[in-house]
Image (tube, rainbow, N blue to C red; front, side):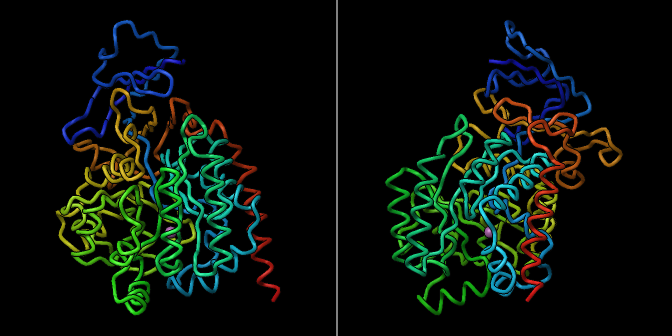
Amino acid sequence: MPKYLIRAMVLPMTGEKDFYEQGEIAIEGDRIVSVGEIGSAPKDFQPDRIFELPQDVVLPGLINTHTHAAMTMLRGYADDMPLMRWLEEKIWPFEAKMSAEDMYWGTLLALCEMIRSGTTTMVDMYMFEEETAKAVLRAGTRAVLSRGMTGLDPDNARKGLEENIKLFEDYHNAGNGRIKVLFGPHAPYTCSGEFLKEVKREADRLGTGIHIHVAETKAELDIIKEKYGKTPVEWLEEQGLFGGQVIAAHCVYLTDKDIDILKEYGVGVAHNPESNMKLNSGTAPISRLLQRGVTVGLGTDGASSNNDLDMFCEMRSASLQQKLVGSSEDLRAYEVLEMATSGGAKICGFDDLGKIAPGYKADLISVDLSQPHFYPRFSIPSLLVYCAKGSDVRTVMVDGKLLMENRKLLNLEEKTICQQVEERAKRIAAQFLDK
Ligand code: NI
């Protein structure tokens, strides 16, 4: 197994005071052996290669806890619309024309962008998810995948569930455990109670979890209240969906009782501030959730409602949005970094990811701090959240393997991928212009 030594500034995300100015990380195979100041590696550690990055800070790879990767195909196709109209008039008709191959190339494009901006793990929900799995295996990143299922039409529901089960059988733990598979019922307003119960039974049978959109818009809140006389969270609890791993994306409209329910069942929240702002969905009560002890991760949502997949931008937006509606003391820089690393790892169910510590997976990124916008260096977390951009990431490693070095992607042919997506997306869009 290859052994590496990385020398750089290190922000291990193991505690707010933990920082190594002249740090050293020892890696063997896919795991971290030690972290500390220079000289802290075991005496007998013989590295195959030493990375000297004195101008960089190394931190855990970022975890994007909610996205639809292949939606890069729809980036900029439909902007400036409210969510329900956006879905019904533009997104769903376009998606209906997308082939498995389109999904594959769209996902590869997303992965190029994610690696370039420091995201090493994504939580994805979409169709043709086996193509997403193939793209992830090729790119070398880590992913938690689910087949997005709608359950109001029985035939669609059956097909989606069968595909999600097959995805689990074919890809769960693939790529040295880099891929995990969950079940992806789309949302309370697109699934019946009966279908959700069936999904939960299957997830329990296979020993895995669930990824679902919850309480994203006021319209959803109104639909569920009118139909069942309950909030979306109360209704999902009644269907028995909680208990076991659940990633609830958005959670914008929550009562205090809803927050208690999320806490009680250990439901993880995937917060998507830029998508929520762009679609005018609202502001999720993140400060209240954190105060109550609910674990929160950060996500970009799909590229058609963001419109980039840059988690550094997302961190900054997350903090600024909470401050705007709350107080300037809300969501401090370090708390946002936790959401994007250790918080994300926790809601994904990983106990060896999201921190730089002995025994943890070697998923690491380095950010080039030599640039003017990183001086003076009073606080590294502050610089990373309020000043950094994805394009400042220099090096990316997943599972102890280099995916980007000096801003050059090592596994992916970017030019081909960009051309493929350009041609494929324009071909689909042209079909709607003809009418
Ligand atoms: Ni979404």
